[in-house]
Length: 197
Image 1: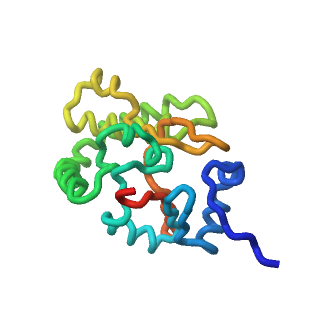
Image 2: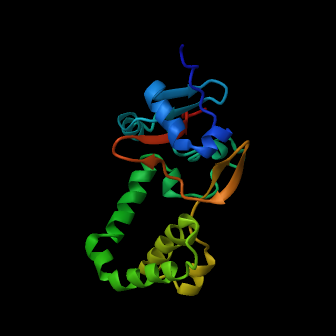
Image 3: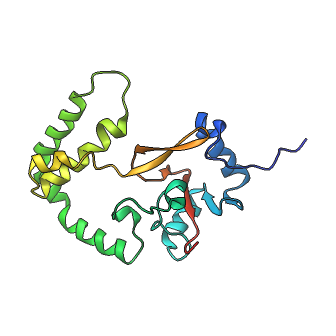
């Protein structure tokens, strides 16, 4: 008995309930998956994703980091390094690298620990949203402090997480999540649309 052809549906109940199993099957059966109907690729093997990151002519982040952004008529919600392709990305990254040297970060150690303790101390339950409650707001506050942004201004800027769509069965809903591919040494999973499409 042969298995049916693998179909990736980011809106399905199956994907919502167990994305790891879906990505595992894609890695095994269709590591370079193309969806004709949606006109997008899903790459699930580390080597393929690493090569795609270097090929900005074929694979672009400029239109968004998930299907909802790519398909949206509104486009990317804000100008961010995450949504830039070279040479713009390289230029912005070089500016950031100069500001965040190991020495500069070490000089801010006490302040960084204070911010981490502030956000971890505010968590009052065993269940919480790691991104919304910690990893979204804490780096923004640290960066704002390093840049000399007044605390009152930094706190009004929100968590700093990029609004991106995350899957809910049958639909896309807006949530505050960073746009980053899931990555491990064994495999990396991400979704891109074709450049110029």
